[in-house]
Image (tube, rainbow, N blue to C red):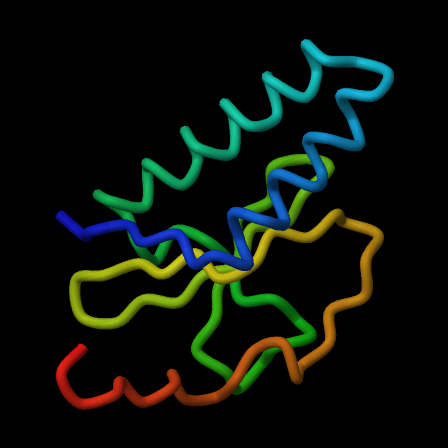
Length: 108
C-alpha cells in the first residue's frame, strides 16, 4: 500500500475551488471534496491508476479526473504526492510541475 501526501498547494487549490462552488451551492462543494478525497484514497492500492496528462508527457506526473477538477500527482517508491488540483478549464503550465522533486535540506 502506498502512502498519500497532500502538498500544501494541492490542499490550497482544492480549498479555493470548493470555496468558490460553496458561494452558490454549499452541498455541491462538500460532495466535490468528498469525491476528491475518495478518489485520492484509491491511489493507496492503485497508485498508477491515473492517466498521464497530455500537457505533461515526459514528466513523472499522473492525473485523476473528478469533475470539474483534475488532481495531479506523482508516485515515488511507495509514496503518492498530490501536487495540484486544477479546474478542468484551467491551463496546465509545465513550470508548475518540476521534472525532479526539490532536494530536501539536510536535517529535514
